[in-house]
Image (cartoon, rainbow, N blue to C red):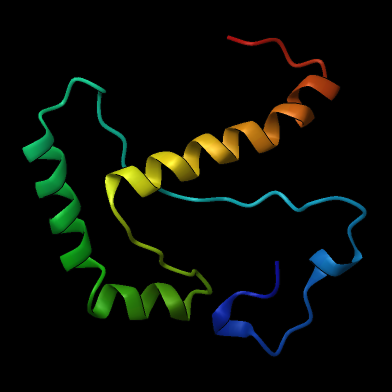
Length: 96
């Protein structure tokens, strides 16, 4: 993992870490029983919002905006949870 795109000239602290870095992300979630057409409509509206000035402003703030399908976000979150499971286990954090 390197620097955020907006500050790509800044050195990345991640190169100095002895482990994979943790990262933050923001996404929208809906109940699993939500009608597919509603989920797709929300996804389309979010993509519209992120296609203009908002994307540029977030980039100025150092945030990389990634969009995609509900399925790709689901796969991303599942992989992220699986990746961090070892950290939770090592820290003996009880499941809730």
